[in-house]
Length: 137
Image 1 (cartoon, rainbow, N blue to C red):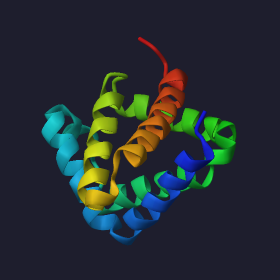
Image 2: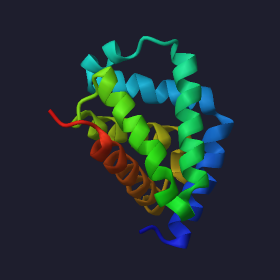
Image 3: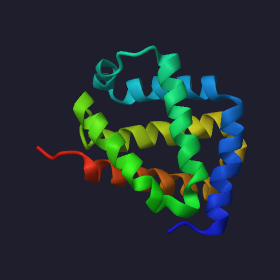
Image 4: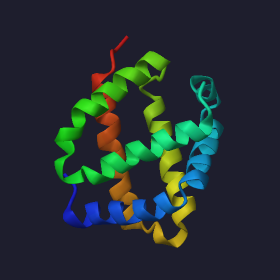
């Protein structure tokens, strides 16, 4: 469970990310493909479109932090969708690492340890919800 202060840190930092959405998303995808070269084959869309989807999802998550349980059905759908695309459960950790790295690059010194920890909590919850809904081999 996130504290009020952690939710505030995530929202405040996301507002900064939103202002630089395209460069942030490109940083993320670049890092993701660097960490997991096999992930590139999962993306058949234009990365600009994919970047918009990423920002929309992060926006919805940050707006729903007080009522995260209400997000579970949408995250479950995303988890099943991603499993259908071929996303493996172990790739969620790589995605989280790439996101944390990209957020750090985008925010610079504003991405202090408390903000980093708050984002790690959010991403862990999101990934857990998505993985739980995905069919297991």
